[in-house]
Image 1 (cartoon, one colour):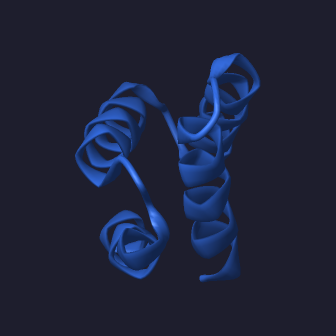
Image 2 (image 1 turned 30 degrees about the vertical axis):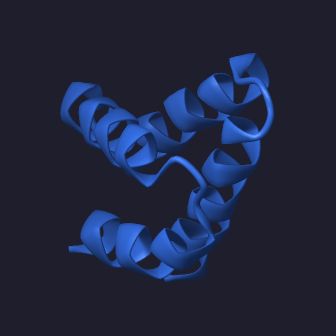
Length: 66
């Protein structure tokens, strides 16, 4: 699954991996499709504080590369 693969690839770089994993899985469950998921994720990135914001950006980069 794309979500799991992106999480796996982001894990070595994420400072707050468990928080990242919980958030993206919740967003995925709440989303109607991948486009909606990406929109929700970008909104979370806008609201997030560093260094978690960087974790979210890393995940987004990995997800979009798949």
